[in-house]
Amino acid sequence: MKKVIVTGGCGFIGSHTVVELQQKGYTVVIADDLSNSTPSVVENIGRITGEKPILEIVDLSDRTACLRFFKVHSDADAVIHFAAAKAVGESVSKPLHYYRNNIGSLLNVLDAMERSSCRTFVFSSSCTVYGQPDHLPVTEQTPRKPACSPYGNTKQVCEDVLADLVASCRTDKGKGGALSGASWKILSLRYFNPIGAHPSALIGELPNGEPNNLMPYITQTAAGIRPLLKVFGNDYPTPDGTPVRDYIHVCDLAEAHVKAMEYMQENGFEGMDCFNLGTGRGYSVLEVIGSFERVTGIKLAYEIAGRRDGDIAQIWADAGKAERLLGWKARRTLDEMTLSAWKWQENLQKKI
Ligand code: UDP
Image 1 (cartoon, rainbow, N blue to C red):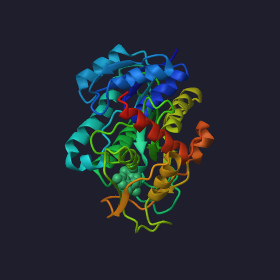
Image 2: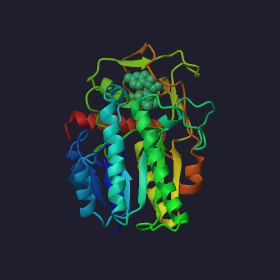
Image 3: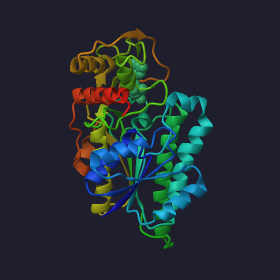
């Protein structure tokens, strides 16, 4: 049975990917510092799949701890790297933490992998690398724009680190240089807006404090934890004036990670490539609210407020490359996303 290391496997996208991996027969080891998650996630994954994944509590930005962890698990066949801080606003006030944590962890993980024979790596990237694109939908060829936040910048720098690493192996080979082991196989997955939760309602998004993102803000408002949702701007050049995003169900995203990993292992793939992971269709903030109200029957308390700094008007993916090469396509609807997010919130209220 193949073994996969999932860093950040207790987080939102990580935990759903762990479920998908286990259900496909993989053995999973999670490395997580629990800075933005709880160990109960592992219990709940076990309740879904019938098998509790191994959890090692480790801060991957601590080089010694990271190397020690990878030494113990040097027989892993692949690494899926989610572990990173992700709050855009917080990254503006704590840039050093974001650079140290997100870039430092990546460097440590790659260093540790170089000491093993594992060269298959999946990286969590984001559509934030595109900024506000000039043309829609965005393909993987769409030029990246300068990042709007330290968080966004860490995603770009990490992608650059990976590209340089792959290029250095090519140079090495050209010169007849010795490579320690096989060539790298790296995919950077650029997520659009992941929302929703597992249909069991046992795992989902667990924001730390007041949510930054739309979906948890909606569910917390509906649950009475927040008095009011502010819709940040209705004067954008979009059909109803509110910003448009490509929301994707987290379970679709989890399936894409397993397909991406298998694609690298089965197709003689070498080097690095990027994939957009979205549905290919955008919805406005008001459309998301409309879906939520329709599927839950709850009238949401919201008001139109001013624009949020750094927000773009609209973005959605051309996800054709993932369909052609990975054989993956997002299947779940917006209504499934908003309903599953609500079921998860309701379950949280019951203190699972
Ligand atoms: N949004 C909003 N109110 C909130 C949070 C988000 O109106 O409390 C809007 C935000 O302006 C954006 C969309 O919801 O247009 C998605 O925001 P989110 O932070 O979830 O993702 P982003 O696309 O900004 O990464």
